[in-house]
Image 1 (spheres, helix red, strand yellow):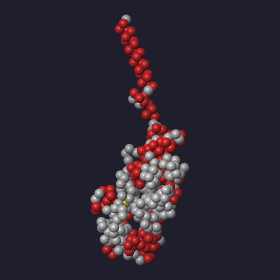
Image 2 (spheres, helix red, strand yellow):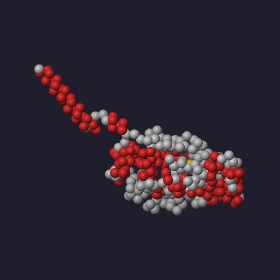
Image 3 (cartoon, one colour):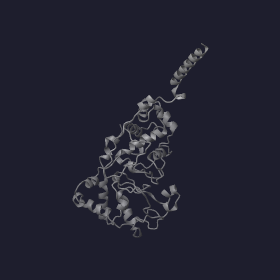
Image 4 (tube, one colour):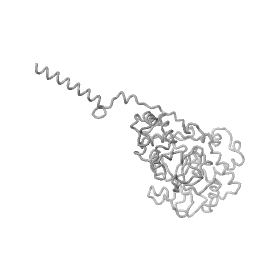
Length: 363
């Protein structure tokens, strides 16, 4: 009888322990598998243009409808920044191909920005970010930017303080990352990355030409055609760095702007003096709308840029790129009419639909 009572008491004790464990699941037990199984996201149907290379997606941050929706709200919302007065859209305006614009080269506190704001276009095909390539992932670049005192100056704690009690954000983070408790600097960067990666520009007149069966001389205006020839031959040398369908080789070059550097660019990241003066070759898509130009925004118009490449190249600039084949004569020496034609061709890279695509706009 004594053994029977001990056995019964042991069973009851075990049952009570199991019941307590079930109720206190976060502290002592294995997570509820049924609850984990209930969380699922919807893959985003990313349509890569056929002529583009394979996009670069982070394995730990796949594109989902839920992540993109959250990123979209975050992109246009100021409340999670330090001070609640700056959003991503403050410096990345859709009508300017998500660049800042020539009229606003300062931060909200009046500090002059050291470098021009790069446009957010076709970033799903990049594997390094910033003018000097300091960020090896888009999430890393986003965190660097939104925590920068010259930008949004936010932190993990500021984000949680400002939006953790917002019912809408609780729902969006839960759908994207499984729980309202997932609100953090890292998940915010992941959601923003997902949204920004869907910014695809491939509907310019240049793209129409590529998709047509017409010869360039048949498709373009006379001025555009002359610019096309200049761009794609040694006359202009443009195709060396901008000859892909992304209209950039996404590499670093010193294009001979300076004999003495105030900003050494890639060299500051690699520590290699032969990289001094090299900066990322930016895409020319929507270049008509992304002034000012160059890493420091020194040129306000495309005409000024073409003028520099014609007559202003510094042949003695350290580490000048060997692709600058006409540096010794100061540049490509285009005539006034040739320069105008090249600018006309550069404007065929403009994708008007991108600048107003409702999928990228505020909700």
